[in-house]
Length: 327
Image (cartoon, rainbow, N blue to C red):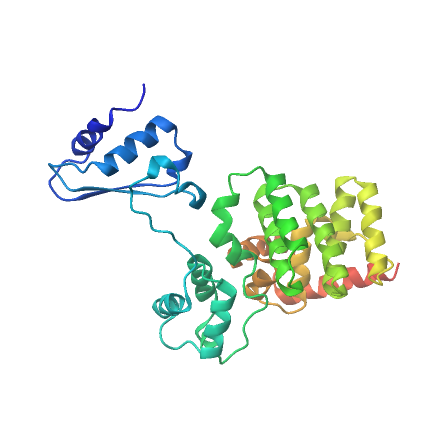
């Protein structure tokens, strides 16, 4: 069934939205609609309904706004927020207690994007916003990026999402910021349940960190990748990972022994962080996952290893990995 004649659109709106109060119809990405539907919408926008105030708000890609079908319609071109508008938005989001230096850095990081500015304001604590504590680095971590832009990536196939995120990390000019994209890719694997894909992402991230002279962080990711590849039965990938580990100065990275072999790479990573004294919130920030995810994994770790406290976990982990290192 084709679209109704343009003259019928106000009638349809009155039928499905009865009443006499003004009505605003918002249509997003109208350039993606078929030509007959666009013709109905633009014609209705040009010819107001005499019986009821009905407004149409149509959004389109900037390069399509000058096409003949939109001729005669008022056009408002939306760009990034200027400093005054961004400052006002930040005031609404975080109040008047934002330190001037912090405000300047947040405006610079957001580059006029209101969604990014909102994500930054929500992520920071009052002490950080007030300049009483150092800001986290990078300012936008994987969790904040996903909360802001994840809905745009969610419909894509998992391999495509990972490729885009890792490509973004590889081309990030700021070495401290690109890791957020790779961390985000790792966080998404937690819901995709792809052990091999996660291991490959860890390997690529480890390479990225090593080439940016961050060997300690690279070793941690590469060790997890090696464990995962060995469990997946991927010897060629495991050998490639060992080569990357040797390049960091770590000649050997034995697989977990004994009870630790029951843990998944993510569980083992969380267990190691906890054994070093990190809180659940600190582990979550480090791995770009939620504290609830950390708590879920940690409860499973306790059950699998038969421990009841963080102290017991730390002792078991240090004993098991110490024994493995001595072999």
